[in-house]
Structure formats: structure tokens, C-alpha cells
Length: 329
Image (cartoon, rainbow, N blue to C red; front, top):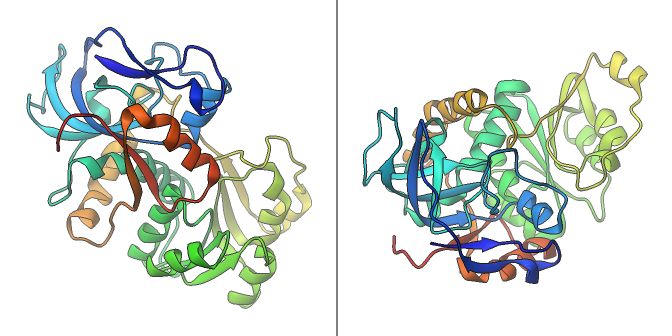
């Protein structure tokens, strides 16, 4: 098969479409003929040499895919050759074939194009696990999403609105904020021009955000705590603004607030399977009913992954950037 390889870390040009050995599904795994994959920030970090795959995972980038099952490994039940699926991966999505643990597979939602299904596994698993399973966002509460126009952000807006929460977002510029508003965001904050702490307080009569989903990390840590409501929950899922910050524990104590930080890629298989099962139970019906949908900025040929990474790093996109193999959907 062919896959996007990284012979040496570097810029987008470090991504090389090359012939590699076919993967073989192990115990509890299925082999998927990949139709499409999606680009995530983690893929960019891996290309740069900063985020190696977990032990035993595929060396190729790609944390999610959509395609058709072509073979079953030992011990797999509940899936058949030919099933159209999408899956959460520890790596290997930028390839024509990938072996996927059966517990990390999802059926393609009814009525959704197979190619577009690759936009779902990572964002739905990340948002559902952090915003709902960990931070327990409830109806009528306020969620603040940093990077509202990102793949994570566009999904977080939709899921929060679906459960009856109020949503505030930060994004860069009026065009991205307009797209967030189309998805249901109530409070629109241009981080280039406005102070999100002040704007969230203003919009909530001084109460603050009950849950904050943060991709920035250290740069926003203190201000995120300031923006939290009493009993608020800050869920950190990214470090685009640095890894080391100073935390005012006094402010955290006064608000009886909580800070959590999670990643998805390196979790044990059982934890990933539990998250995927929860996504299938709670999110998949919303997609099937058209309440929630994947937001896709563009679809590029997989051999042009370098261009996809340039788009990701330029931050000009809204939603997900997908990569499609030569296979047809």
C-alpha cells in the first residue's frame, strides 16, 4: 500500500507519499481500506518531531479515518467485511489501509457521505469525553469554546446547543465568528479585538462560564480561571499557547472550580472504547437526525497532505480538512 511517511521531521514538505508494507490486523482488530482521513494539530506536531505515536501504534500520521472493512482479525465480533465505518486511531490514517481496534470503530451515520465521516471520530470523542463525561455540561449552563471555528470548536458548539446550553466562542475575525453563529453560538468574541473574560462576564450578568474547553493552555490559564463561574470546570485539551503557566490556587478555591487536562491518543484501549461507545449512544443519533453535522472546510488528495498541513498551520480554515485516497466513496 501507499502511506504518508515522515523520513525526517520538518515542514510540510517532510510528508512523503511512499510505498510501505500492508498492515496486518491483530487480535481484536479489523483492517480498513481507507477512503478518507482528517488532519489534526497532533499530525502537525508529529511531522515536526514533537509528538511521537504511542508504543505499538502505526508510525504514519492520521488519528481518524473512514472506509470499508476488508478483513477481520482474530476475536472480532459485531463487524463484517464490507461494513462502512469510521474509526478513532492512535496513528496510521494517512494511508490506503489501517488496522483499527474494533472498539474504536463506529458505523457511518445514516445518510452521511462516507468521505465526510472521517471528520467525526476525533472531534466527537474529544468533545463528548471532555465537555460531557468529565466536565458534565448541563442544560442552561454556559460553555466557552476557544477556537470556535476549528474542527473541535464547530462540533462543541453543535453538541452544547443540542443539550440546551448557552455557547460562547472565541475566534479570529468576523468571518469565522459568523460561521460560529450559523452553528448556534450565542456569544461571539473576537480574541484579536476583545477580552474574553470581560465579554463572558458581560454576557452572563457577571456569573462567568460554567465550562471552558481550551486548546491554548498556558497563555490562557489565568484568564480562563478568571472567566470561570462558581463551581466552574476548565477542560484543557491543547497547548497551542504553551505548556507551563502559573495557576492562582486562591482564585480556584474561591470559585470551588476544577481544572482537568486530557489527551486521547495515548489512552488505554478500554478507555478509548468506552468513549467511542458513549459517542455512538449519545452523538450518533443527533447526526442521524441532522441536529449535528461534520463541518468540512475542504477535501484534498491524500498525496497532497503537505498542502493540507499548510492550510492547518495558516488557520484560515473553518472546521475539518480531509484527505481522500484514490478510493471512491
